Image 1: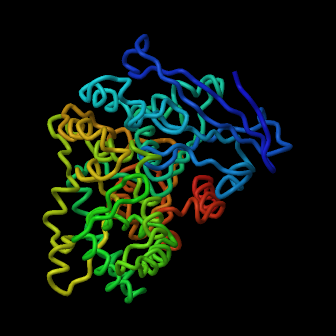
Image 2: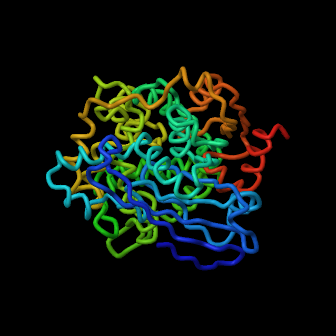
Length: 434
């Protein structure tokens, strides 16, 4: 059953689907998927090809647009767009601290979540495509992790694609989780130094906040424990176009005077909570390292935590003991996330089991990608915080016919910040108009 309704300039239709939890067992347990169709007002959807959008993450449902926001403005000229909530997100059988106990023990929860990677997401797409397109291939637009899914799509089911568009999401075909983070920490350090060069007054502000938290970890609204390490993870700001500026504005009002002396301001703590809480996207923390796992014999084993140990400049205690700036981290998940965040604490044992899990299957087929015949274009952002640029360009060379637009005009959120321009550039590339 579908329901249609209107927003300014668009007609929206809700779609609900049932797909197997395990596509290798189609008669087994079923889960529900949700997707929202968007068509420009005045256009007949029957005259338009489909574009399916795969959101970044993992763990984020498709963005809830109002009208023709961001890249939708350009897409709706030529397509009817399907905004898919990937399994476990949004309205697609959400997986979180409230729902996962229905699976039973942490062992069973971990086994369940092992089916929430790109391979299952692509098979979901292929399961619902015939009902929507009548069997015709469609265009996929993949942002960040959505680009990882798109690369898997090209590896396993290219017959389902008429065109593939990727923004900030060309993954390495072979890098382990350790190798991904070995590349990430130097990149994060560069982002930190660029921030402090732009806002030198933040060096002392950050040191003061870190020193305060080292003595007295704070409790955020909702019960989140703000430790020094948790504070450092505000480096996620530095991966977006205006993130450095937003981080600066948050830091400048960190302290207020109280009868008991200086204290961290409620407004600051609330701003930190909004940025650090995983309540809205717990899958990001639970399966984040699993999206890089491809060796059946090797667990991810908290790779980001292990690699951090060989980058001493990210050790806040050492920085505070000397005169070095305290560096922020970003795009990493650590065991302590599951002891400081109330949205994750009940899932700590499940997370440990996923980190220790073996038997992961390869996600990409280099031979098939080398013979690719699907038109593909990718936006690669220079020094992207979240996806290593060198890895992306190596993959671009390995996919037959893939055309890249390498730019420093945008950061990782370019498809949101750049909206129509980014999508227009990619469409021009695949249509040989650039």
